[in-house]
Amino acid sequence: MDNDTKTHCTNCGKEIPSKVDFCPFCGAKQASSTDSEVENNENATKMKKGDSQKKPRKKWYKRWWIWVIAIILVLAAIGSASSSDDSGSSSSDEPSTSESSSATKESSSSSSSATSVRKSVQVLDKYSESELAAKGATNASQIRYGELIKSNDYYAKPYSISKGEVLQATEGKGVTSLLVYTDDDSDQLFQVDVRGKTKAIEDDYVSINGVLDKMTDYDTQAGGSNTVPVLFANKATVIGHDDDD
Image (cartoon, rainbow, N blue to C red; front, side, top):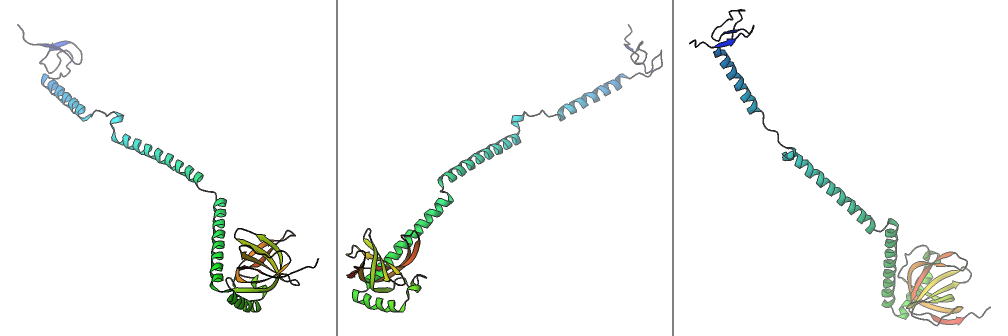
């Protein structure tokens, strides 16, 4: 029995013995079994290396950087929403500029008025009526009316009106305000704030010993406004009445 195995020529395809190096028909060189095995082994080795080098791809949700980006975007959205809410709350809770300015002016005016009254009361209570009369008469002779209406430099100084005529009398809470002329020719007008009530009425002549307060504005009957000095006093003494029509 012939144990020689057969194969086919790699060139012409005719059946030839498997152990020949050249085809007996066309002369083409044939690959030996050893070479074939070596080639097959090399190819198998290459395939294994290629397979070992290719790592399996991770699914997208298993990649850490995707989650980092997602967390950053969520935090940014929350911060933006919080900032918007704070802005809306701030704008609705805070008063407008004009309202705030108005409230500040009113508070300042009220504080100034309260301070003014307190200081006038302190100075007024410091002196007796005779001391006020003496010091007030001295200041009245030395300080001209024109100087009184220019500034508040004489605030809290004793001052006396020896004779003045009441133009208007208005009772308020705890205070009666008198508009008093001291000189008919030059229209020297004072606002006299008397503690409590007084018997003085329009056209009465009065004598007053008090303390100068800060100036104030009053509305005239003609619709204008005048700035006048203010005298704070304990009383207004009636010394006569103008009976001329």
